[in-house]
Amino acid sequence: MSAARKRPATRDRRITRAMLGGVGGAVAGGLITVIFSVLAQQHPTSFNRGLALGGAVALPVSLLVMVLAGYREMDEYGRRLHQQAAAVGFLTLMATSGVLAMVEGHGYGRLPFWALYVAGMLGYAAAVIWLSVRGRQS
Image (cartoon, rainbow, N blue to C red; front, side, top):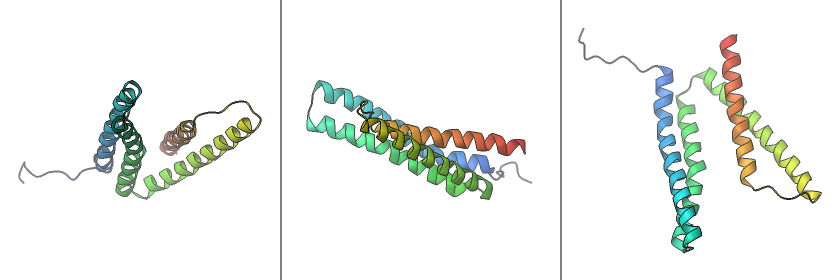
């Protein structure tokens, strides 16, 4: 046997490797958004505003690519876990948007649209963590 033979990557390593591309895109999109948002406030040119908007759009798109790339590498258990977590995240998003619509309808102010995005992502992340811990205990 040769020492140069590589061991096959474990499932967790394959998923991590697949998702790292999305993390890089999310970090780049976040940095572009922050830098050009600050520049757009100081020097409101269409170039600065356009790059700030482009970075803001790239952030959730890169997160979507990251999750889909990881999902494709998962086994049946991992896919089922993420499907359940996506359902919980969607339910969290719908409940939050319903509450915000009622609050806004009664004239108690307006929350920014990004609050819905954050609520949905936090619901998804909390569900992934909870389902993963629950799955390890059984």
